Image (cartoon, rainbow over all chains, first blue to last red; front, side):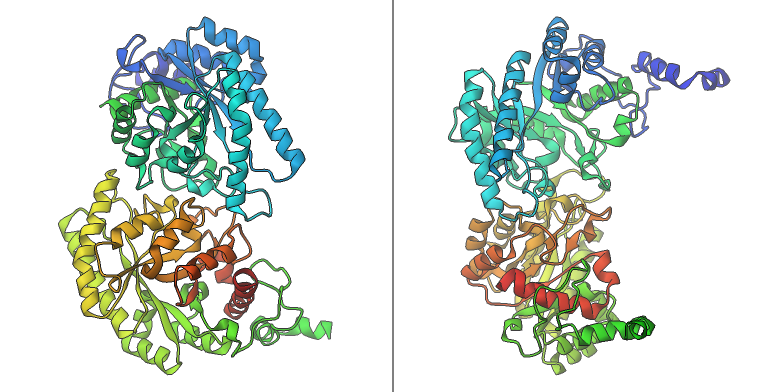
Length: 318
Length: 318
């Protein structure tokens, strides 16, 4: 048997691993550690709020990701605009609707810090298109990554002010389309180049002037876990919480820090505590696994989905 | 002349570069960009508060760093315990005293997050020794880097609570020795492995129960520049500010993020704005340049000191 197993080609092995993932021999990816629990099966009530953000299985097309969610018994998917564009907007909407999936989020709009008028106008126009796409997809929210400091600029308060101004233009447009914008604070290590929005409290300050159904916030565990004021900020967020995303903080950071995210349980984040805080704040929406990680991306996507189901059970619900 | 210059050995060339650093041909290190201003000479009033943290010129021994400060007209030096130990505590104190230098800080104590009793006791004992060393050196403060999460632990609030408990033991000991502890918030990207103290406000919360002369805080530009609540936190800090350290945030981050610090002016930090806030809060102590950066460390230390003098003028005072 052992010799035969070694003769199975890699692709077939991956499929076999998927079919037998609930048995005791399954391995988590990318750690290679033995699975801690059987993989929850389709219909398992514990999966009722678990969503796959499709960049976690980046190799999959939108159609493949939708099929992967159905096969795994996941009720919701977080979509990315580039994948939606590849599949076509109408076709994407049809695929998720016919599969019976909720769209837990559309990623992403934002990048609103440009000081140059033409660049700013283009950013606003692109965000209006993103809002229209989110409406067509009936996404629970449109995630906004607000953008970093423009090249050669050092005026951080100025860049933050421009985000507030752009948001004031976009929020009513979102409201008119029945779309909720979700401001995502990114970890402070991305402040210079990705998002001048760095804490949940700052996101709530930014959201405050706008109706709660137009502007919410994202609680992404990776970005906010370190914040000493997180418990108070999550309580304060309450009904503003539009999305709860999870992945772990794993050291050492890779050279490309955008890919620093890990599978839940492989790092330092106490997901159970954070999930309890988000629950106590009143959030009842989907919990979306979003992992940017070269090792996760090179693993079999089915094995990634199976691992995330198990880790969701052991790390959040356990 | 050109051919002759190329024949000068590297060490002599470095010395020559130092001697002629105030002329128009000087190059900044490590950027290689032309110097923006002449290098301020010994006795220049603009240098009255500029301190060299000796890890910026890590290649230098304590004696060499003291001599380098005197040669460059810097009135103060930030010392590190390992370098002090190499030179001997009494000899180090004598060297800086006879050179007429202030000791702007001693780096560092801390690492107070251990949960295991023996490790915790050893940390307390080591911090008591550090306090005694700071007293012998008449350092303006003893910088505390509080430590990260212990291996395999995820209880961040618990680790933070242990820091508060250890501080309560150490503060009176510091007071009895006339030493001021300086709590250093580190950038949140170091929360897991270096310091669970992540913002200036958190440091102030931690300092609050203790007399201001026993427990202060460090404002290190690199660690706090991203904080949306920094202006309010610096105002709140007021007389708690025990140290103001500077270096720049330069992208991309290197693989070893501990070495991510850059020369002022090479990155995204608005030092003039931050220095104005620290000044308005009442801080009148030394401003210490602390750069951990492989390119800075491999440059001629004299050229590093000359560059930091010029950049201090152009980036903070200009």
